[in-house]
Image 1 (tube, one colour):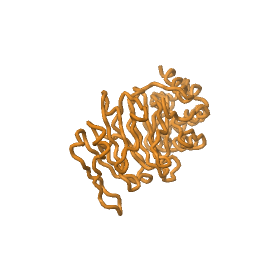
Image 2: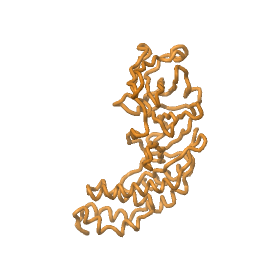
Image 3: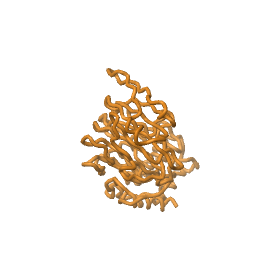
Image 4: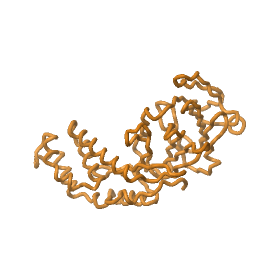
Length: 319
């Protein structure tokens, strides 16, 4: 079954939809690239027409009211996010006719609806809540000086599905609507969040998720192969340091998976003397290093994902 999952993952990379399991938390964006303050209005929020939004430094506190357009043309919204990005307040309203958190959403700026998922012909079985703790149902951030909103959908469960809506040239546009796992990360430490995608969640042992860095060209995200390779190499360095400082089965599996992502199984096998030493184990003692050496020697993953970066395709904007 693991081999089948990996083959399906490669099919997704090549531009097809994939299936798998949703068992990951949304990744919080780095604060260095985001200027936002947010709160939320729970179900029934239309009866309380304002919500406190903590003011950014140098700005007076704002109390965004429920948009008149929302009040006039819509009813029964179940939740509202109020998010301040670059000093402007955006509201995201949600409606639900399904079994998940929401089935429709609308983004409001300056009291006007600037994006409506229904009008955009986005049909979904439902969406998940991004942050229960913050009561925010979508991730909102500034990416490359653009207001961006990330929505996680249930359509491809148990694998992932996401929609990204961004403000480009003054208009909200769908830049991703695809069955992939998405997260924002500052992959090159330049203070800007990058969009990172994987076709599936990965699995253990030694079935790594394949994360690629994407860049926006026009209104579509395309793979950035050099940055993807650099990102994978940096992940290998981080995971090696993690294993060296905290040797465990978990950190070791992550390290070996990083080698597989880079197509370097032979390099990993040549370093097992060090791996034993860092874990305080010896060859043949039956410890986890022994176990994973056998798994790595017999794993078919290296062949299955060989050349995966060259097979990456642009992310879809519609299904």
